[in-house]
Length: 159
Image (cartoon, rainbow, N blue to C red; front, side, top):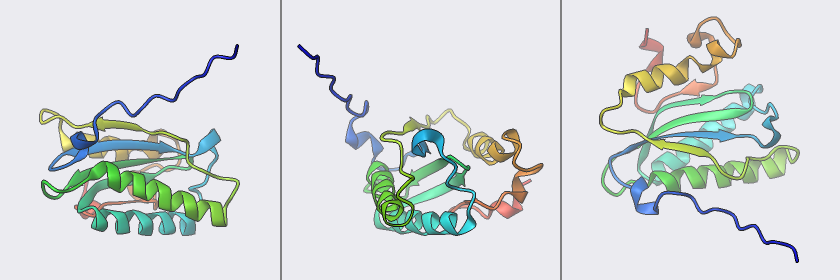
């Protein structure tokens, strides 16, 4: 008799992702294929992300599209903001765009998330994400990397 393996549910309750919180997400391309080396693909994903941020009343403190994965630091603008729905909608809409335009690529099924506690330093989290392309050897300085942005800060002014 074959044992049925059931997929685990996301570990936190849906309501945890609503309101004035900040959540760090990491999403990977299935098989770690390098999709985000193309600036036009990044611009399309950035556009989809910004549409979903508006729809779910959220903001992106930072987003960083590495060649085979994405870092997002998302926050709610008010008590009705739904960060998980925003992320899930972004993943669904960008996944559909991939299916139509680059069917050999798709998102890994789940993602890593971490809700920032009040004691965690937001600036340190942002700087850690900004320095990902440097640690990966893609650029010498994070400001040289083009596939990043923020809807909260003008990151060009950061040191």
